[in-house]
Amino acid sequence: RTGEMGGGDEVRNKQVVLRQHVTGFPKEEDMAITTSNTIKLKLPEGSAGVLVKNLYLSCDPYMRNLMNAGTGMPGYLPNYTPGS
Image 1 (tube, one colour):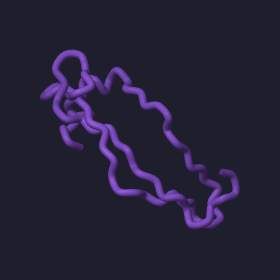
Image 2 (spheres, helix red, strand yellow; image 1 turned 120 degrees about the horizontal axis):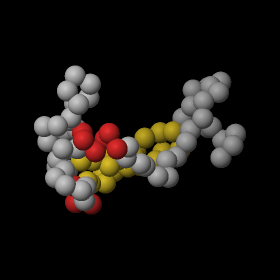
Image 3 (cartoon, helix red, strand yellow; image 1 turned 180 degrees about the vertical axis):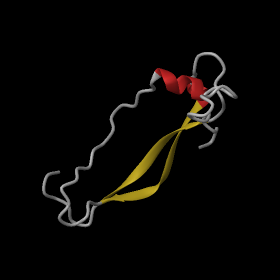
Image 4 (cartoon, helix red, strand yellow; image 1 turned 30 degrees about the vertical axis):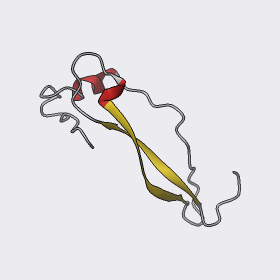
């Protein structure tokens, strides 16, 4: 909504959370969609920033390794921790 900064809209924050380390091809049950408390969408007064809404998420191939237990990329990126 252009020009409607006001007090900022409150929205629910949805997150995709890893339930467990993935074995084989990732499955729907390996992930969970959670909704945290509401957050206020407000840009600082005079800011030239832009608020965007994600419609789709993608998973790059390197991320697949981080979903496994114990593989990761030592010295570069640690494995994802289930529940976070």
